[in-house]
Length: 107
Ligand code: HEC
Image (cartoon, rainbow, N blue to C red; front, side, top):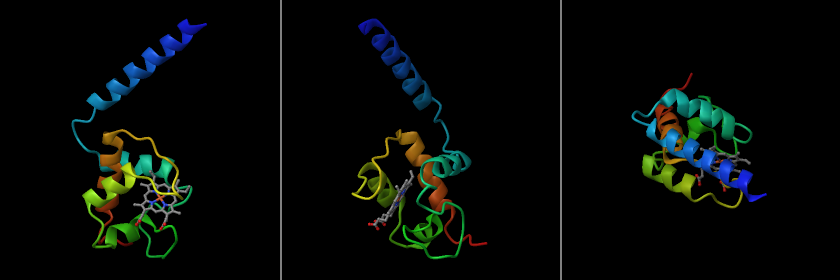
């Protein structure tokens, strides 16, 4: 019964390493779609002036305390309320690029 588990594990490994080699360039649009998939249940993802809690990604972007480094820290150290998000470095970089792209871009 352990053979299928090994096969699945091998397939997962192939999938993971395959994904990480794709990341030649950080794509803001991919970041947006990852954010909509993983974060929109709690956060307003798109640009909006409305204040909300949890903070909208637009609010986060306007906060001068928000930097790539602070977002990287938050996404690698999920706090109590936020779910434990398992993302690759590429996905984190893409979400971070998307959030930072919202800075000063209200509609
Ligand atoms: C289950 C709900 C939930 C999901 C899903 C979620 N968050 Fe959050 N997030 C929260 C809450 C609630 C807060 C506010 C927590 C607080 O201020 O203590 C928060 C706060 C944050 C903050 C600001 C933290 C701070 O201290 O300023 C960032 C950045 C953030 N989330 C990013 C994300 C990203 C990126 C995703 C998707 C990958 C995500 N969140 C998914 C609930 C969620």
